[in-house]
Image (tube, rainbow, N blue to C red; front, side, top):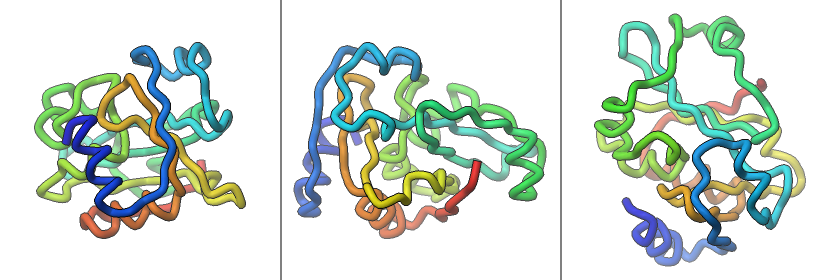
Length: 162
């Protein structure tokens, strides 16, 4: 799905959201140069894989956090992890570097990727900001709606504490 297809998908599902368009953002550090509707609820999204290229994980955390892959491996009993290569990102999620996000899971027809959402998003605010498969906008929606979309698509979901 491209940006417009994501917008149409959300609309057709009847999901309430807010969208803010902005200049292209390639790294989370650049987000601070954009106007955030909900500061602190922007995401950092990482696609990682194990050393056998058998298990893929899309890790979504709050933007101000870091992921220690060794700690993640130990805590969630995975094999050694590294970042997915650009060809894997394209083949599995039909995305490019700088555009990794949970909506990309809708392109994962083989359901290879486990979605790992940082537990901190499950607070009372119930809001998350993610790119619509394009780094020139942020879609703000309820975390519960995002989880429903991914669950309906069929990707495994883990709530993780990082």
